[in-house]
Amino acid sequence: MDIPQPTTPSGKAGLSALLGEPGRALVALDFDGTLAPIVDDPEQARAEPAAVEALARLAPHLGAVAIVTGRPAAVAVEYGGFSGVPGLERLVVLGQYGLERWDAATGRVSAPEVPAGVEAVRRALPGVLAELGLREDAWVEDKGRAVGVHTRRAPDPQGAFDALREPLGALAAEHGLVVEPGRYVLELRPPGMDKGRALTTFVAEVDAGSVLFAGDDLGDLAAFDAVERLRGEDVAGLTVCSASAEVDELAERADVVVPGPPGVAALLAALADALGG
Image (cartoon, rainbow, N blue to C red; front, side):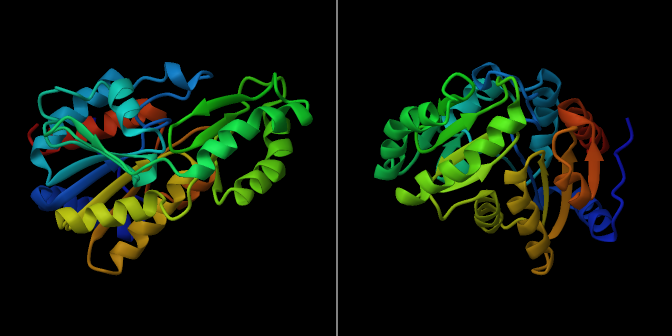
């Protein structure tokens, strides 16, 4: 497969920099919806085997490779099947929007303490959902340092999502948290970290000369913003949208649009082929 060509001049420059000097390139990827298909039960999400295989072929040619996800780092590692994969010895997983970090080189996770507000929200949520008559329609995912409320299983997922936005926003604010909306999920988490900050910090750490970031959801817009800022700091950038029928915003902003996780896998494979992987 040929590498999908960017539709913007800055995207073309980002791809050219990645291919021209891969040893200074960072490839960073979201997990759910990008490497793994979106499923009704988040606990059943698994990375596309073809994507992991392609990433393992590509990674040895790059300066760095990272997964940037809202999931706990250890969960992303487990569901991605990343541990012990030949070629991914230098993989870094930035979980909980960068609050957690797993390094393949050590196999260990580093993370701060869970904020008190997260535990308070965890206790309050059942009552809030019951008051709204949504206890049977919404599914609560405990992410350790965040809590996600999913509505994908509800008879009217968008209606339940819309009904929850304001009360969950108030609950989060009461306990010093923020709400991050996604694809039929509202995540209550600590402020001060997002995928854009996580990506920017990691770019500086590895001294990347170029960065490719691929994502699918609203939480990935912060990473797209970071790529645009980095371009102004002489770091070439390429943004990739793993497209779905549920979110349009990323496709409108991306340099390259591919058809979901299979498209991401094909893109990674094409890059690996181009670099001799």
